[in-house]
Amino acid sequence: MPTDSIKRPADVPDNEAWLYDNPTAIEEVRKGLEAAKKGEIYYVGSFVEFVKDESD
Image 1 (tube, rainbow, N blue to C red):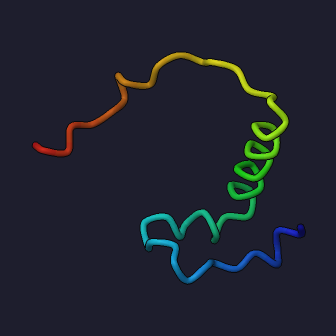
Image 2 (cartoon, rainbow, N blue to C red):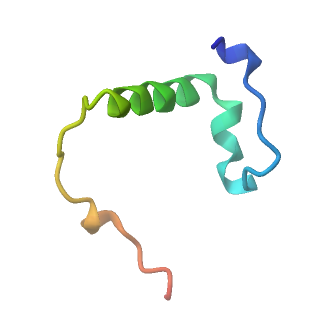
């Protein structure tokens, strides 16, 4: 699918809309999803140290 034809679906929250405005980023997401579908995945470790506690 050409990146210039990507349209933002109506149900995408505003804080995620940037992805549809960035053709490079959405193409990388799509490549990652295709790779995952084919089982081309590997464990890269935990990201728990990067989680922010939003209750502050």
